[in-house]
Amino acid sequence: NSSSFCTILQPSLSQLLLLFCIRHSPFNGIFRKDSMVMELLTSSPRIADIYSFCALSSLIEYVPTMLEDYVMPTEGYEPKERDTDDDRTPVNEYINPLEKLQMALEMAKGLATMHGHSGGVIANVDVQIGQFCRGKDGLIKILDFNRAEVLLWDAKEERYCTFLNGVPPDGSLRAPEEIIDAPLTEKIDVYALGNLIYSVLTGLLVNRNFETEKAHRRITHGKTENIDVDYFDSRSPAEMALVKVIQWCWTFDANERPSIFQIVEFLEDEVRKNVYSSQDVY
Image 1 (cartoon, one colour):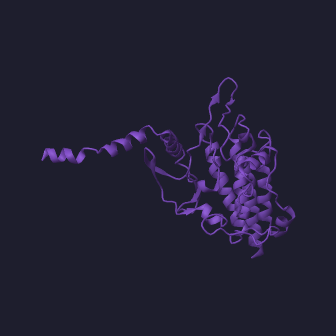
Image 2 (cartoon, helix red, strand yellow; image 1 turned 45 degrees about the vertical axis):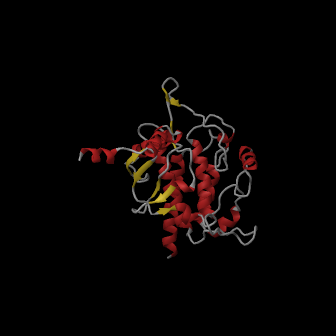
Image 3 (cartoon, helix red, strand yellow; image 1 turned 90 degrees about the vertical axis):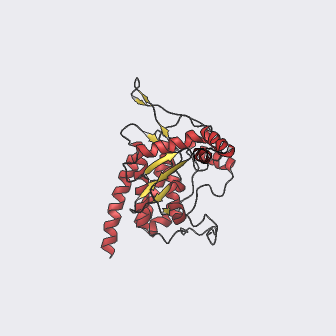
């Protein structure tokens, strides 16, 4: 009857409170941005497809592999550690050098999709290993955009405007200009990509041995992870290419730092050279 039908649809007080909290949640706008940016970029195979979203939830394509689980054996419930501090062997040595180089290229292409968006530059602002996954099609994709920044265009100066983001509470994975709350550009993503590729190369996080304050001080003084160039040069051309691109991404001055498109071009060239050389070996 009609009365029972109305009773079924009548929301409880707890449901009404939940809806009110979701609607007025400070995270609502963040997650809405996450979904809207994903929708803008959904035509790219480098971005996870979104099918729908509501409030704090979104429905996206199935992505079976999180790269953090694959690349970082030093994280998680049973972290793998190096035997000694002098040991320079990558802890993720189960990944061959050419695959690491190809992974770096795919990650860079994902960011290039954002920076090269036809409607204007979109900065990711939160580049870290946990934002990347491998889809069922085998491609590496970005699936998190809740800190993304759509850059505004200054018609008078004919350039993109800078933006401010506040000093990050942790910041151990951020660019130097972020730590001092300076005007930012999409180049912060390039610096952070260097951190990401360092993890792909070694299986380790940058600044893993430092408290936040010391990590901030190191970053703002241009200190980066110490990479034994001779060691990797003696191991493989692919790993040496990764060392070069990491150091290039870590360019301290944002104005001198390469664009993501320059990084993609460099990595594409290195992948081609290393594919041919590996075929020569076999």
